[in-house]
Length: 213
Length: 278
Image (tube, rainbow over all chains, first blue to last red; front, top):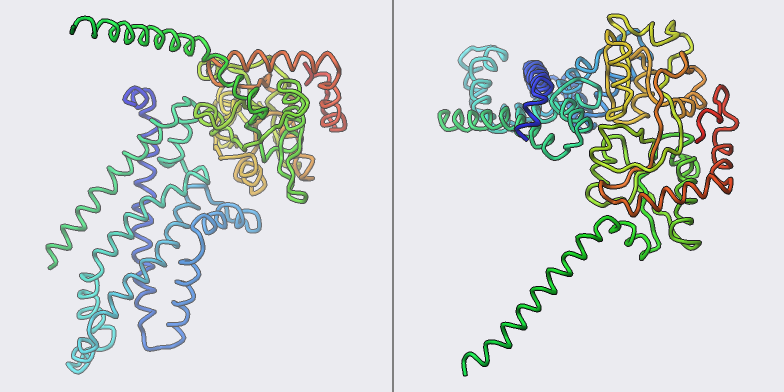
């Protein structure tokens, strides 16, 4: 396995780098989009609540592969929009993960007692001020553990890039496996690289959780 | 008294040990025909074949049946190897999974558009070639790409299937082109149709099958590298390999091989069966 890595280290590292890049971009956008829809899901206005609900339910219940293939194959066929595998995969992953993050954050917002909002409002804060300074800080503290799970899932789901030639870790591992025929060591190496990313994240989330309490 | 009793026992143990080593030796020498003996005994050969490659091996969407040149060839060889009532079983393999499946004994032999290469010979044993394919290029009919030279430019993208020899051919003949690899021929075709690459490179027989289904795709530039297909068995299974070689030889002699080639490739435009046949 060490010799396999020694012979193909540049292939693996390129994949590792692309996986990190895709995960970071998706993490950033899915957190923003997800939190946005989470807030929309809890506003008093029925219309916006409905819009958020539809978005979340659609993208939470379609396989990630389907979402990605739409961006990779369907859009370039019928529109002038041309996306590379990396772009299509990252967009698909961001949208898909944002639906899950929206649900997670929404549950956090709703678990903050009704009295908090009422108290803030009766102290003269507007709805958005109360959201920003009272509800969300408490909500995010509550959702750190489930959010950590979503982040770990997001990193693992970035292997979607392998299906659209996005040059991620899984894609590069596939190529090493099929060129050297050393299937088992190739995929074990891929697994180790994913662990290098996900284990520290899991432990950091646990640390945050303890510190928060 | 003690000695009297232990001696016959010792002798017994010794003979048992010797017998065991001898039988172990006989197993050792028999390993090369393990697969062959197994198929002979079960009267069944499990072939690793393509499910997604028209003309060679494809599971028809309409009839849900496997059909193609390699499927027919597998049935023919099965009859020749294990007798008239022999059964051919089929398991799907892709370029990536064929060698692992062979190694873990899921299949007895691979008959799936597999090019004979020196690299692969390190892992498997090949029969004599049964089809002479050549790497070729498939493009949209609207594309300006006419040959491999047009692809040797910055910004050109060539689609290949993972684990095929086409990637090496493109890297050698058009080093400036980018290579994108997909899991199977279906994904490659979809990517080409969606404009995710300028050309799709793989063996001409496979591409001819795809072009026959899609009117806006065509083959260009002739063959850029010769790719002889062979039937692969696990490394060291010479018994099975020799049986396959003998069956192939018989099939070539009695004309059944030629009839199969003619049946599947005789009517394909721009495809010369004389060039493909062995």
